[in-house]
Length: 362
Image 1 (tube, helix red, strand yellow):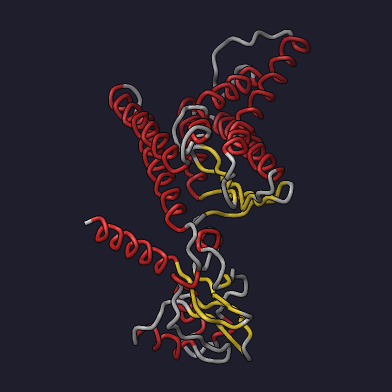
Image 2: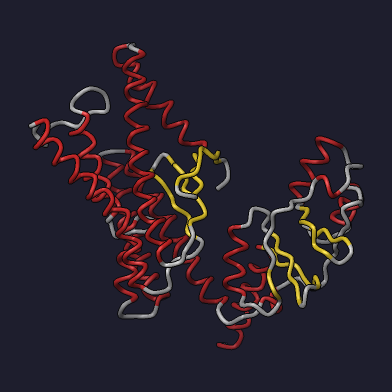
């Protein structure tokens, strides 16, 4: 995810923090400092938020480790002001597996809440009821109700919350997957409107949640429809076959001229028939700004990239393309470079397919 920084790895999974998370920490610090002008209050507020997001990471690890049991890797976990997001390389195709993966996160919070409640009652003898405060109060009680709140919030039947995936999985047990997604997305968008309406009268933060839910539901429906449209189509039908490759010794000036002349934006880098990397337009601009247009392509190209085979299905290749930061994928056949696959040309292929479909219906 753009504007995110890596903060470490947990069980082999990259954990990163989005830039906007710093805005949340800053807002909490300012708010709590303003109450009594005490630095200790600001630090306590920030500390509680950090503990809270530690719980969020455990929640996301519940999803990730359960998905791993079904052979699905997790690309990363990103901390956002609204919580955490675990990016799986793909969603489980079996609705039962998706149901288990979706419930694994809230199950972690249920387990934590149970352990905290047991500790409070058995060890400290404290009451589990009481006011929740970011600063002061009983820390265990605060964390208990935070976990309960996370369970309730995440089980709201709306994408991108876990409840939306639970609803979709249950529906997919009885109907086609795309239809189940459309129904779950519609339910999510209806709830989003309720959040927005309630936020106008009660709490403006609900408006933000409503917009987040609306976009998440629309994005999930669009992604599944795209996945369905790409099914059964080989990469060779959507790839760019009229393309230009460059060598690592060419200058960025030469490649810039290719872009200006109307060739593609991103270029596979090939030497002696072997694909060494990919030079994207963005990387060209960055390298030119730092070292000038006489910089060799080999100094600016990306050496970590995905490839596809011309005969493989477009849907799994597109999934890998979405997870590839360079958004350009060289396509090979019998070890020879025969094409390039980009996000843009896949989108154009889908639009063309839709237009042909409408013409056929007419």
